[in-house]
Length: 302
Image (cartoon, rainbow, N blue to C red; front, side, top):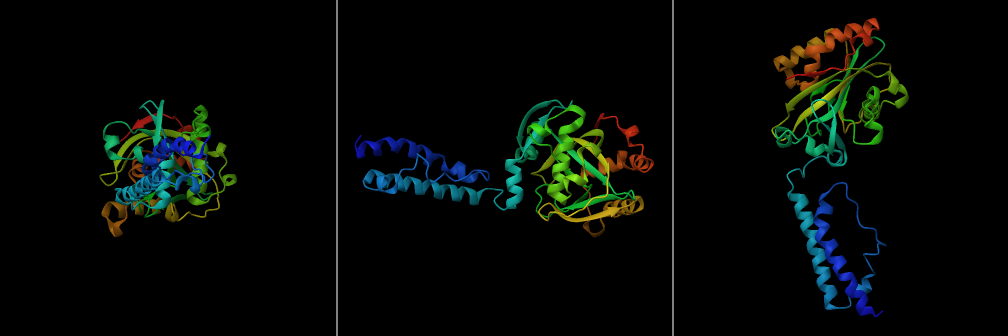
C-alpha cells in the first residue's frame, strides 16, 4: 500500500475524533488519548501535505473550543474534588417504594430542575455514630461542598452508588457497605472501626429540600445508627469541623440554629431526624435496645 493511501485512510478517523474533543475535554472523568493509539500515526505521516495542515488546524480549533467551553461552563468554579464526585458518582434512582428504576450522575440527581420534574429521587443514607459515652458525632460540611456547604449535620450523609456491592437489598447490606466506605472517605474512620454488621438500619425517610435555587436533595434516606469508639481523621475536602455532643449540647445547637446565632445552620435532613426520631432513639441507644426501634418503614416527611 502506498504512503498516500495510508494518509487517506486515517483522515476520516481523525476528523471524527477531533469533532468529539470538546465533549471529552469538558468531562472531568475523561482521559487523554494514548500516545501509541492506532488512531494517531506518527507526525511525519500527517504533516507532509496540505491535507495534513488542514487536519492540524481542525485539531487545534477543536481543542481551543473545548477549553473555551470549559471556562465558560456555569460550574467552572466548582471545586475540583467535588466536580469529580458530581460527575463520576452514579446514584441509584428509585421510586417512592424504594424500587430501583435506574441510575444517574450525582450532578443530575441534585439539580433542582430535575428534582422538580420528578426525575431525581435516589437512595441515600445518614449515619448517626455514638461513642461509648453515648455522645453523637456531628460534622460541619466543608465550604467546597456543592449542596449545603458549611451546615452542621449528623456524622455522615451520602449515597450508595450504582455498583454491585452497594446495590444489595438484603438486610440493607448495600447501604451499609456504602456507609463504611464514606466514613473512611469523609472522616478517615478505618473500616475495622465500623464493621458493616454493626450498623443498625432503623428506618427510611423520604424528603425533598432545596439548597440554593440551583441545587437540592430528593432522597430516600436510610437512617443508620452505630455505637463505636473510633479513630477520626477528617478529610478537609469533605469536612470543615467535627464535634461530639450530648443531648443538652445538641439542644443548645438547635436553639442557636433557630435563633440564627453566628450564622449556624443545620442540614434539612438532620433537622427532620431530630424533630421526628432522634431523642427517642437516643434513649434506646443508651438502653441497648436499638433493635426495638427498627421498623424500616418509609416515612414521608417535609
